[in-house]
Length: 103
Image (cartoon, rainbow, N blue to C red; front, side):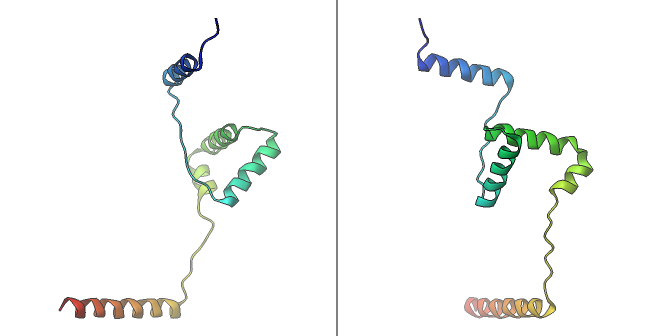
């Protein structure tokens, strides 16, 4: 006799627990979703989890220095001196206003 859905789910859950599997969920932006779709197309893989796990294994295989380089931020933020001075002045005005309100 065939197992019902509840029994199958229980067996599946038991196997996952035995293997130490854990479900991870996270939100992604549209650009990241597009990159995942590209990777799936390039590798001809239809499973998102499989592609993400493979990507993690690859980055891990690079070792500490390689992974650090692969995952480092590519954006450098340079604040113009004029902008920094303006932000500082705004902060000073706000601090003065808050001090005046407290007094």
